[in-house]
Image 1 (cartoon, rainbow, N blue to C red):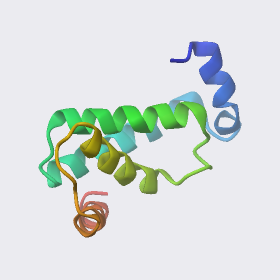
Image 2: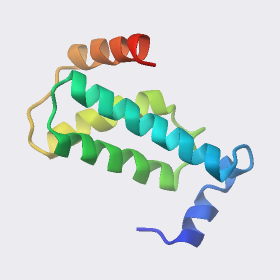
Image 3: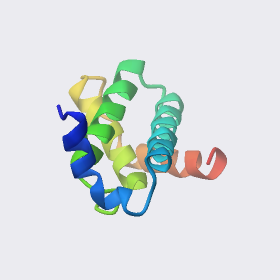
Length: 106
């Protein structure tokens, strides 16, 4: 876990372009996106929470420019379902659900 100074140091590349408030809004948006994916896939809340933690921990170390959050969110859901032993989600189901959520909700 990182303290406040380490987080600011790691986020420096993002904070040159975004303000702290804008960065937090982006994180909230993708947290809501993961929540919608989880609800659509009928996953347990524990899987959704784990996926959210994975996303936030990844972006605590890397810039938003490194990997598109729209690609990382389904990846975090997939990995969280494996870690929490919820059962494997098929790739085709995850991709189609992600497309549906993006088109309909966001």
